[in-house]
Length: 275
Image 1 (cartoon, rainbow, N blue to C red):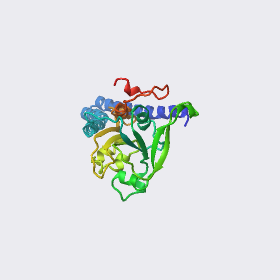
Image 2 (cartoon, one colour):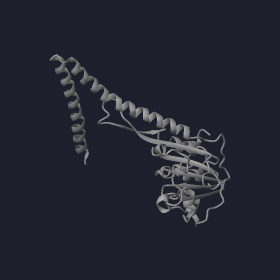
Image 3 (cartoon, one colour):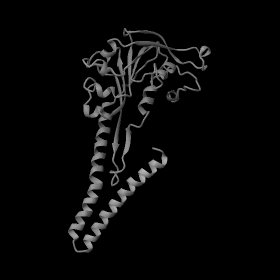
Image 4 (spheres, rainbow, N blue to C red):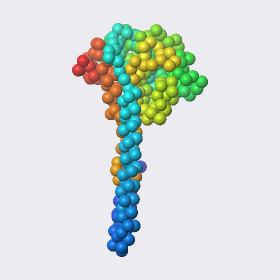
């Protein structure tokens, strides 16, 4: 559908809704004018209730989710990744993607960096209830380093898999980056209520070492996604919300990887400026 098609659709939708509301108001006015005051007032009360009650319930539900997300998110007082061996487990397909791993590789001063994919774990191993067991059951683990800018086609230092293995290396920390509902697939394993996990859109967790089944993360940052219905116009309009706003938790986790920020025009250390 092109732009004019969307405009026509919105005009029909909102115009039809406005006509319906006007018709109800006109009906109430006619009833009151003809002496049916109670019936006319009931129409008005019903119209107001229909505009307020569903929206109020939606906003109460949104506030409850926001409070639950805040309660389920936590960070340690101190966390030092510098000089450590870290494996990044990410649901995206790009090896050492831009979200966290690439940033940490450039600015974190890490001793060794590894990366493993966490996509489709439940489908590949439905019998395993712990996602890290599914990764250890044969997923390739890549050791990653930055290329030499002088030999790169772009002239930039880029993440490059220098070796791979199906064995899990000895690491100090595991960093999980989930933007594909992995948290929902393993809600029980992560100790999260399913009704909360259903609303989690982005999740960041840090574990000491390679996580054993049931191990609690030392850092967990959750971002929820839900719809909030506005008063009165909720039948034709809703507002999709991220709580907290997008990139807040990503930037918060990035700020822990600032031991040796690199200078680069294309990959600046934005979250290291205040450290």
